[in-house]
Image: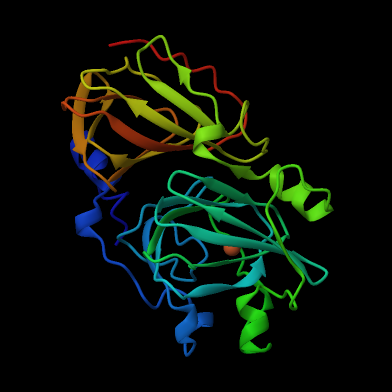
Length: 314
Ligand SMILES: [Fe+2]
């Protein structure tokens, strides 16, 4: 059964495009290549598409158009083996700190990312990650294509010594720290793909909310999707707007009401932390914060080009 095509009313359709954190489960068996390797254990919660998992038939997951979106949970001491994709993939940290390593020719650059920091893993670049901190990591991963190809592993513990797999392929002495001013070509390359929340300018929209652009004009240049962090103060909302592609809002903190309109009919849904709505291309939609606390919202938009949307206060 496809829950998206059986929806009959606008309210049903909005419900079918809403991913509730409490309706979903973390899947500890999403990545067959990790089976039998306890040090690689991670759990995936799928919202849009399957991401890097082959579990594309999951009917509780929204159908992807231009991007996938999932949460990944990983505990201290665990890592993900170095691999690459044909398409870009972003890691947005929600809780904890995550070491992400990029490998080229046996050398590795490692960056330590904290909450609301993001890395866009470049096409075909070997990347892995590891939890060295004391708390588990929760992050949101988006792959910028609806159905990615399986990852290509560069240093998987089934083929390489565990110590080498854990360092993403770096022999002792071959790991460098991330440095925006570093001279090494791999440091320079990674510098173009790391977004620190505190380094991005805060854009105050006339409509009364803030945007930090992570991917798109003012952030990382990209030809697939745009990604932004929004801050929506209490009692702020915007008038209906329409995009030529789909977008998704994932609430990180606070609560946000999302509304849809079609043929004069309107429906709304209130989202809490880790709830998501995916709005299809062409659908009139809006958002509003009815609560006393501000909302922090992760937004993914299914095309790189600016879509001309001007947000107007409701
Ligand atoms: Fe990846």
